[in-house]
Length: 326
Image (tube, rainbow, N blue to C red; front, side):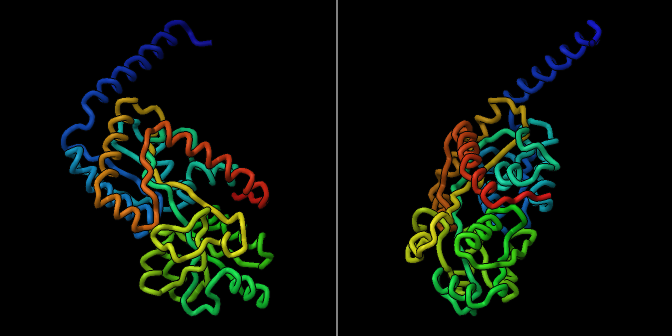
C-alpha cells in the first residue's frame, strides 16, 4: 500500500500535469512551434499525398509549420507507437487508415502499440477501394478473372500494401468466395506494390482509389471492379464487384487524424475545427473526390463511432477467414 506522503505526492503531480495541459490548451498552438503529422506508410502512398495537401492548408490556417513525417514499417506499428508515446499536447499527430486501429487489433494478438491509447480527432475521408490489374493481363472484368484463375490454378498472385491490410483481407475474401487459389505478395506500401503491378511482377491488387486512379487514367493498369456497395463517382463506368456476380467484397474504410491518449478537449476541438475548415475549401474537396474518396468531416465523437462500427464489420470477416498474424 502506498504511504500517505507518497500518495499525496502522486496526487499533486497528477494535478500539476492536469493544470499544465489545461494552460497549454488555452495557448495552443505556440507561434513558430511545428505540428508534426506522422504518416505510418511509405512516401508516395495515398495517405501521404492527402496529408501533404491538408498540411499545407492547416499550416496557413493555424500560422505554424506543419511537417508530414513518413514512418513506414511493422504494418503502421512504428509510426503508431511513436505517436502513442508522444506528449498529448497536439504537436504530434497520426494520419492513418483503418489498418492501425481496426484490422491490426483484430488480426494481431501482439502489437508494438496499444490501439486503445489514442485520441480520435477527425475523419478526413471515407476511402474507396478498386481491384486493378496489369494492363497486359488477359482478363478485363471479374468473370474473366475468375475464369482465368480456375483455368490456371496456382498461377495467380495478388499484391497488397502489407500483411493484414484491407487489400490483403479483400484478396483473401475474393479467393474464398470465387474458389480460385491466389498467392498473397505483401509489400511495404502502395507505391512499391503499384510499381510491381505496372511492371508485371504481380497481376492484380486491391488498391485505394487515391493511388490507383493515376495509373488507371494513364492506362498503366486497368480497373476490374469497385470494392464497395455502389460505384465510385470518380469512375462511374466501372461496375462494382457485386454487380459482376461476387457479393461481399466491399470496403468503405477511412483515413483520419489521431493524437496520443489524454489530449485536452480544447486542443482536440481546435484541431477538429481547423481540419473541418480545410475540408470545406472547394479545391480540397475537389482534390479528395478526384482521388476516389469521399470527404467526411464531423466531430471527434463521430469519428470514434466510425471506428467502433468498422470493428463490428471486420470482426466476423477476420473470424470467417481464420486469420491470425504474428
